[in-house]
Amino acid sequence: MRNQDNYINSKQYIIEQLFPYSNADNQSEDFNTLKMKIWVIDGPVRLEEYVNGETPDKDVESPMNHWATLQNDLVYLDRYIRTKDNTLIQDPPEANFDELWEQRIKGKERFLNTEKEPGVFYQDWEQKYNQRPTLLSKDDYEELYQSFKTKETLGEWETSFDITKKITDYVIDIESKQAEDAIESNQTPAEIKTKLDENADDNVNKNDYNYVVEMNKFYDELWDIVQSVKPGEPEEWVLGQLYELGSISFVELEHYKCILEHTSTEDNEPGTGIDWEMHWELMEGVEEIQLILANVPTKRVQIVLIEGHSSHKGPIIESQGTGGYRFQYRMASDGSTISLPVTPPVPPAT
Image (cartoon, rainbow, N blue to C red; front, side):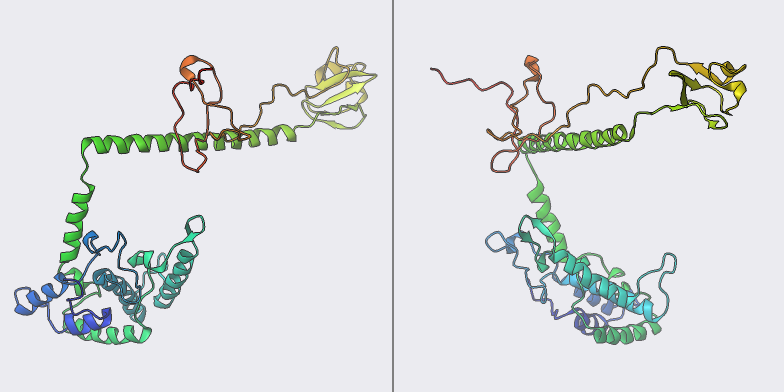
């Protein structure tokens, strides 16, 4: 029964309910009592405990899931013990107790400032137990540390997680919750098919939206490349200049393309030098050089199925071969997604 497990907080439960019993002898009566202390501790809140469809576990200062709270505080105790004993992992370096303390506080601040939907932020009780700050103080952890070292000296504990993990890794409420979830998740074949169809429609909508996003990325990248290409302006041939392969020069309005890198001399002057043909190629009929762009595509835009919307182009009827836009962001006027009709709507009779 909820709140009948003698739990006040993790420190009290460890010291008063767990530490008085030794687990050195797995056959001892103390060990069996210790197992019962863990077994009956309150676990997840089950659906039967919900009030008007909402969980009653909304007080983070007095959470109802004592097992998850205990496990979270054991993470802190483990880090406190290994920080004090200088046994933290070094490669990669592990955060010490104070760093973990600060990381969890900042993590909670980020969680509370995150929108789960437009204008609605997460509440502190919605944060997962294993991501929450601890409810104990640093003085509490020092007291737990001293008690733990006493038990460790007696050979009863090796790590802080031995307090629970060597005994059992479940409690009654967890078993009950798992059984309840299994029943709730049981679906008939018809329900499974309906769910699959809904998920398929959602995925089609997401894919159509993502296709347009990716197409626009390609468009922007290609357009950047096109814009970076500048028409070449050929210069008049100059004596003593280095000409690279492919460069273009002109002499008396005749254009020549360099076919061998060289430094210009009178002997290789285009058209007149004794060995110019080794270095240049006459570009016959060329009077000017232009860069011509043709058939530049129109950038895609997301299309919504809202009548009168500036992007509305109507549905696609592929089976009739009428063409149209392939990718559409299917969204109704209320913001929900909708499916395209298979056939065009029939106009009312006149």
